[in-house]
Amino acid sequence: MGSENEHTVMLPLMAHGHLIPFLALAKQIHRSTGFKINIANTPLNIQYLQNTISSANPNSPEKFNINPVELPFCSSDHVLPPNTENTENLSLDLIIKFFTSSQSPKTPLYNLLMNIKEKAGKPPICIITDTFFGRAVDIAKSAGSTNVTFATGGAYGTLAYTSIWLNLPQKKTNSDEFTLLGFPERCHFHITQLHKYLRMAGGSDDWSKFMQPNITQSFESYGVLCNTAEDIEPGALQWLRNYIKLPVWAIGPLLPQSHLKKSSSSAPSCSSIYNQH
Image 1: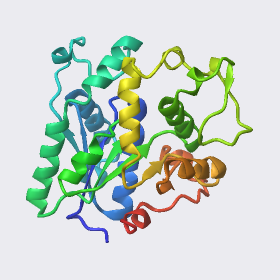
Image 2: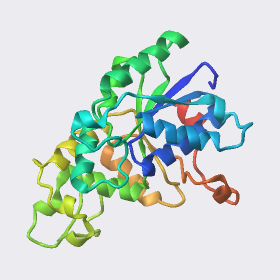
Image 3: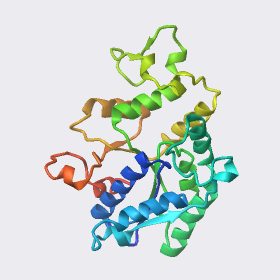
């Protein structure tokens, strides 16, 4: 099914820990399918991605087929310090303000999808977005495309983090230990394992108001790509599939090529995943 006329759009969270695996996934998809990849983000993050791509092998096909696309964003419009476009060096109170402001490029993202549709004669085959951009599910549908969620962490971490945010179990017990929906009853978590902003979350705070609707919507997508391997997390992958009731594809680990030369990972190819769509 691969074709140079097919487009995929990606929207990572504005943090280096998310931009890097998204770029690695873009390279993997292009090598496997030949699709053109458009990575959408704010101007300074796009500059970072362009520099990273340019520093690669000058003859690499990714240089010509992975296209970083700027979405307009002005941090001062959101009462943030000038040139704030990723989470680096931000305090917790500014990080959540920044995350909330990241919901603003809704119209530019839709316009990007429609521009691709006009030029290519069809919408992007899919839009791959971060777990924290659940709103993209409806944007993709409105543009005639399909949304797929990319969990940049492993299956165990993704299940734990999302289940804690959606259920806030630490608020439903007087004990320091609690069980977690999606995990077997034998699995116990301790309050000290949670960051303070998660320990303090109660459902009406800014973090909860950002996390809960975005995570919920992201699990209404077509499926989830998970940055892990079946051989590494077979149990956690099955728990995650059972919990979100969506297809979950283990497409990792997304690591530098030098780390993967001796890998025998059983991750499915990106082309086999696209052929299911």
